[in-house]
Image (cartoon, helix red, strand yellow):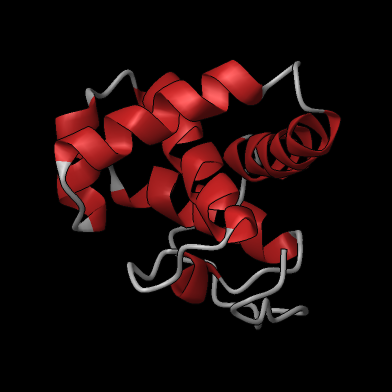
Length: 120
């Protein structure tokens, strides 16, 4: 995991209208939050080739949580239409930022949609 990959996936989530820091908070367990976390970790794993332990260390989580979330994302993608659409949107924006020639290091745009705990 590196800073640029983290910034791109953070930017992709925020472009989709979600507050990245809130979603990555360990106190929130709604399905929408957990789905987005799983998507973020699956994208990080596929794009960097890092093991769940390295991704978990980067995000301050334990290895088993990240490993299970990655398996969840890979299992739901293509099976659950809503999940697949969300995955494809985040991944599409990630790839746009990744291919940007701007050398983005941090994405600081404000969130356009705040997810409220209890919704999903």
